[in-house]
Image 1 (spheres, rainbow, N blue to C red):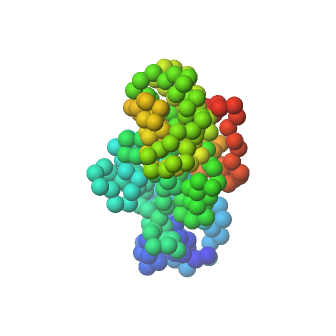
Image 2 (image 1 turned 90 degrees about the vertical axis):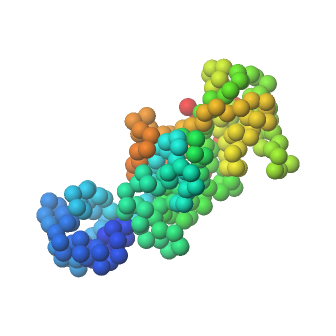
Image 3 (image 1 turned 120 degrees about the vertical axis):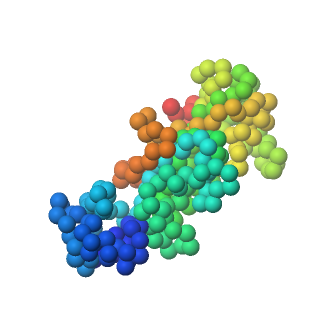
Length: 252
């Protein structure tokens, strides 16, 4: 693949802009400046530097982000900064067959909710991970306003009715390890679902953090606002059929 085309697919601008980056000596491969935009390069596993920043070629982008509080999962936020401002420009400008450029969040977290968020430019992956039909489990750490009792946990596991749907929604797993903490596993993604489920059993969410999606846990060393690429085995694990939670226990 021509070097300018590689840079274009990775979000460094139009082909003309990418050609200019190469011609101006801003691209380094294997420790050497490559200034020919039409140089034939094998993109597989390619590691390179653009304007001093190291990059690696990814045919499709799969990322995790530790979403901080006070951010919106929107390209056009209304009140708070967008999560997309936490990502470098090439990830936001990767060309896409659809109308929207760059990586997109898979589902949304409220502005005050923190934790694990996945982003990608793979439309099929977005559909699989975001569709309720695939029952991908998501684990939430809930700080409740009032002490959580066994009766509330039993109701959450049995199913509660929300105000916009007569069909009960239930937690796939639920446990409490302290009076005001609840670990809740859901396989659906309704609007404000955790908050509404807690309200339905007579409690209230004071803090909400997503700690896991499928078998992928948010790493302890990924600070709020930081992101990283997903490894190939992590993407493969997310693609695998979901494993049901056992005995009402949420994975840690």
